[in-house]
Amino acid sequence: MSLTSEFEDSPPANDAMLVQLVRGYLGRRRFGGSSRISISSCRFVVTLHGSVPSREEVLAVENAVSRVPGVRGVENRLRVRAVPARS
Image 1 (tube, rainbow, N blue to C red):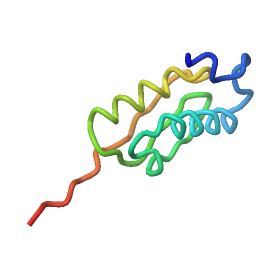
Image 2 (tube, helix red, strand yellow; image 1 turned 120 degrees about the horizontal axis):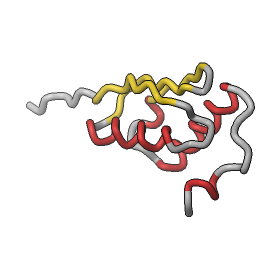
Image 3 (cartoon, helix red, strand yellow; image 1 turned 90 degrees about the vertical axis):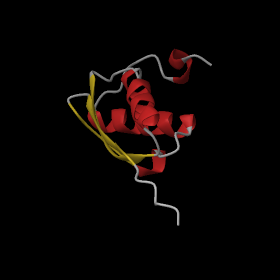
């Protein structure tokens, strides 16, 4: 399924709608840390806070969000989740 076929034809009308769209998109992508990602938007620039399992996922989430229609920019404040030391 292509990215454009997942979204309605018109971009979101406001930041609250954009946040819902991004949240739903990330949920469908099943990123490992999506439940630990907080999403906000101001003037259609999405800010991501939280933690994910790896550096690769930090970049993958940012890339995915930047492709959502209506997103004008992404401020990525995601961190890699610390892994407890094994004893």
